Image (cartoon, rainbow, N blue to C red):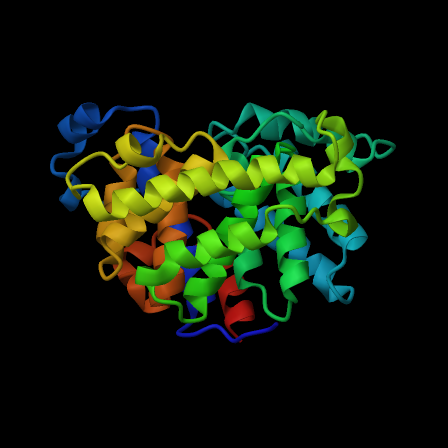
Length: 339
């Protein structure tokens, strides 16, 4: 199924991701009292000057470049995508700009990917479900012209290039699906229910065309059992999110309800919680996400992507959007996919 994005959603989502990343960069690894002592009221947090991003945005752009290369060659398919994205991840890892506290899993996997004689499945860190798997997947929620199978398989593959735990794959698939739903007009009030239904429908579906024999490295009885572990953890996170949306005070650290965001399923749930608390106020979404006790930059970049997909490019004031690092690249990809 193919659908059309609404309201320059791709530009809005990519810009929101980078703005959240930049706002959360200075607050990562700090607890909420320390953030408040430094920044004052969380509702008045301002974008840093300069508005530098982290590896979250860098790897998002690396994935975007890989997808552009793969789709320029024809229909998006597993071998071509794996080759193109692999090269972009290696280039990111070698870049002198890769100095923004990147995750150890991404670094080690990218080092192993440099061995051209090694299959990518053998480079994947099979027991890692860190949020590095899904903080970069947003482009796959925005890329036009994909079938549902392509989008899901590609979202899981890009995660598995570095993070091979089934929860990393399922959370990445869910993140891309959430972005797609919002970008094509889904209402925030029904989003958690739609995501739960999607997870249940896909719980035992292993995308062998995209993942190959990745599952054999994990010790599960079969591919269905392997992938079901990931979906079950994500369903648990969505259930916690569903309760939190109804009960959590906006003034309370969201990480206390849905997790600190260091793992993929928690980053998804807490990023969604920050968005769903303030679906009509994108800047407040970013501020709430950045003032958290967990992986603030990754939580905020996901929350910003959800808000931007929902509200479009107009969600972000130019005084913020115009200053974020890599602005020209973000707009170029947004314009391409919005068209």
